[in-house]
Image 1 (cartoon, one colour):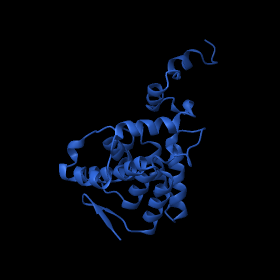
Image 2: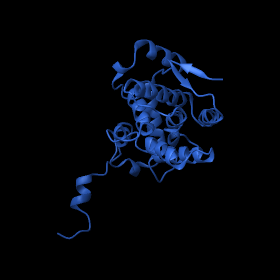
Image 3: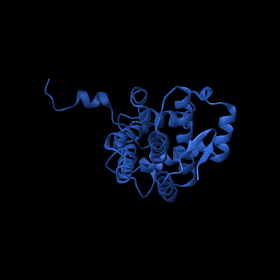
Image 4: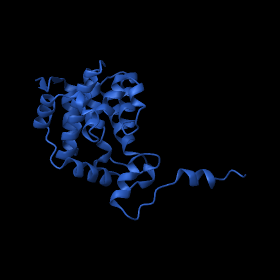
Length: 212
């Protein structure tokens, strides 16, 4: 059965149903509703900007983008974004999606905390960041009507979301602090953990093994 929220059609395909079930099984309500909102906001903004996005790919990008924060799928040796990206690509390839399309979803998830670059790439890459920047950072809310906003939040509520998502970020990254170097993610660790010390890019350059 096809579902429509705020004018956005959620495809009623087996791939979408299985993606939903996978995420629903491992994510708490906060991450699940956030991930669905990311798909919806991203789709609305893509449409407003004249971008044509393949709906199944956009859906998997939105639904899988934070799987690396979950207890089942997070690792300790790489960025959480890569955890989700790897899972999404494997899922899509297992469902017969062509390599190039699966790679676009991988990039969309892997780069969703990297400002500016996704917007220069394929719509299936950009759509994830558009959704994340809307739901987490509140950017460019003027591109979404009040009616659309109300419909999305009615379907996928965001109670105490700002605090809940920050806590989810910290829980998902605290065991791998080194992977936050060079990203905004180290801001989260510094916020929650007063003992956290950021890796300093200038120190690395000045103290590396190259002789002067």
